[in-house]
Length: 108
Image (cartoon, rainbow, N blue to C red; front, side):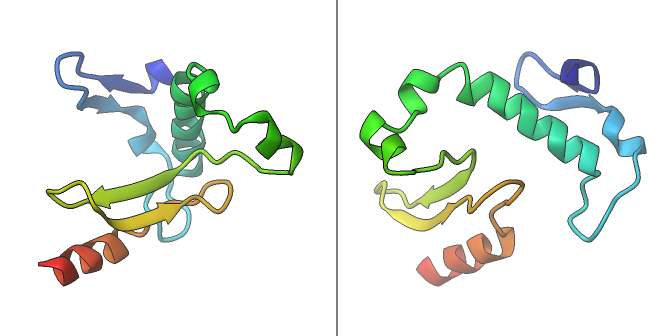
């Protein structure tokens, strides 16, 4: 199970050890495919399913064909206003950190 591949520091949640570092990388993203799949599974089990009642779309949305998404990113300024938003368009997509940094530079 994933908890024997990544060991977290209980005090601050930082990564103490990561056995995925021994796996080959594929593409330019810098994460082994098994690591990405495992992290997604951890998120699904630890967040999405545990809090399904809070996170699930309402019945009307489900009946109209809304698909649930696992990811997204919102960056807010000091006043709580969203200055960058990104929604997961499907499986295994991630926010582009270069886009986030560019947006942060544009707001200063």
